[in-house]
Image (tube, rainbow, N blue to C red; front, side):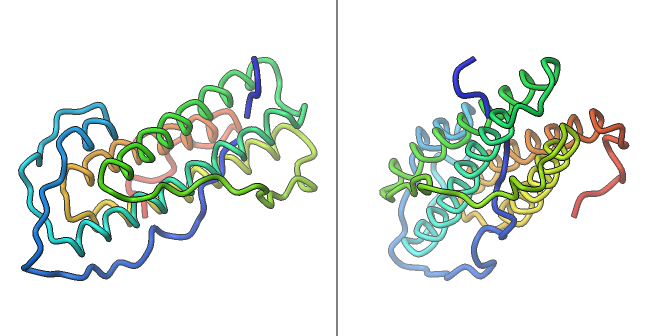
Length: 197
């Protein structure tokens, strides 16, 4: 397994919850952009949004992209730590693969919508000094997945293009599954409550 890795989406919520509304300068979002992002049929292929709304959607996507790239780097740190057992390492690598897929699809969509995708930082500052045993790595990853859930939960209602919101919700579901699996491996309740916040 080349470059296995551990997750870390930023805990910062995806940009401001405020959206500039404009009745003029409507743009039609590309159905193929939505399909690129989620591999789904474009439900809002004809949805018209203003230029300001389109710009805001691109900012939200770029924030999500930055978090996904951070996650890829974090899983890499965990995988290379030497602390993950042979049973857990393939799961971490699979989760990293999901984040890579999310990042590639989001970057492609940002480009398709006329934006410039953000790129990974040269260096991330992870609490590696606190990673002493496998459980530390798993708790770190679970905490980051939980942060990603909150971020996507906050972002979904902000999209002007509802098809993009639907795809973001799909990614949110994937992050929630990662979190549940990591909690289960730690011996914690995989689904500790009926609602996420």
